[in-house]
Figure 1 (tube, rainbow over the protein chains, first blue to last red):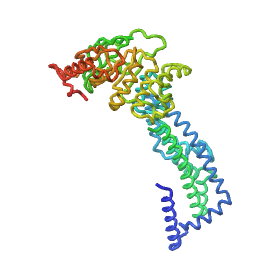
Figure 2 (cartoon, rainbow over the protein chains, first blue to last red; figure 1 turned 90 degrees about the horizontal axis):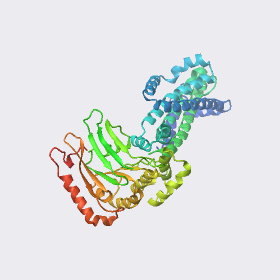
Figure 3 (cartoon, rainbow over the protein chains, first blue to last red; figure 1 turned 30 degrees about the vertical axis):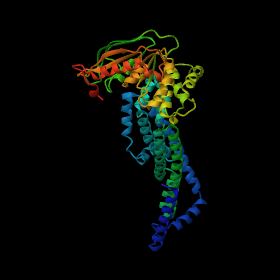
Figure 4 (cartoon, each protein chain N blue to C red; figure 1 turned 45 degrees about the vertical axis):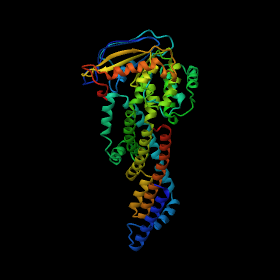
Length: 244
Length: 256
């Protein structure tokens, strides 16, 4: 969808929201103008450091999840039936939402960064792992037959055929994983952190400050859109280079 | 290197046998065309020779290979170039797989690329059908194979391009024992020293129906199509193909 159309729809929605909030004022849903004023105030009192804290946790958790999921995905896709069994067992953990891991994370790592990073890891790991394993198994049989006819070793086949052929789907998995990492960090910070956007939302809820809550939500949305835009560009570059 | 197939048996899982006690011999340096209807089992036979399919019984033997030559080169009906690589890297992959040191790649690839008129830097995905098939030929021949297996490599290109490919390819594979799978009578007569006509019994088992020798020197250019040897061979093949013996499947009643 063209960015201009998105902007028009967004501005129109904000206009209706502003109008509605002024016609039917309620402390539960302040108008966008009041949220903007609150955002300007919070910028002077550490809003940026909350954003950076969340980004740092996502960066750490997502990097670890990507490395672990890609490595394990490669190993399991080459592992035959034992690999299938391990993948099946791990797949049964996938439906558990990251927030359900919060109590265990706090027990294992205590309150703070390690717990939040673990939750981000869990949120991003499974979708990336399954995408990597699926992508590696979906290599066109014609290319595998070519490698076999050429007498390529399994290592050469992996490096020169299977992995490059899987890269577009792996890139899609990494992009999906990034989105889930971002939503996971907010969930983790809602209950298990002393900083970050999730913590900001939670603390302003307790202060009965809906403008502050909405500022936190807006930051999450904007940062998420920004990260997805970067990931989409990288995914498109991978598709151009290694796509069909 | 000569090729001998003795007593070959093969069946797909949960299917009736495709080959039973099958024999074939190809002389060293000759071009043998396997001619038969689509689906009869020509490509399967080629894969059995290449060793990518496991036979149930029988023996496929090749005489001793000369030093520095890979045993088998294979060209598929589709070029099967890896689209993220350029022409050079596609061909070099075959050499790497065969254990040829990278320092030797230029001396192997450059003459072949020059012969087929391809730039090694061209991305594989930018090639036309004919160019891609020439690149696939370079990939197979760079191995300097003792045995070259061609699985309908000219079927997917138009007749004019096919003429160009015949002209380019024949000198390149000259002297290499070659097995060409085709269902094109003219192509078989044009390229082969010997045409092996395959047919299927009603049970589906593949048999050699007849062998036709084509006695004419290589390479054979487009003027060969006007020669008596070509005309006689095509007529002989037509008679064989359309003359269905009792107990055999007709050409048009193949599995495909």
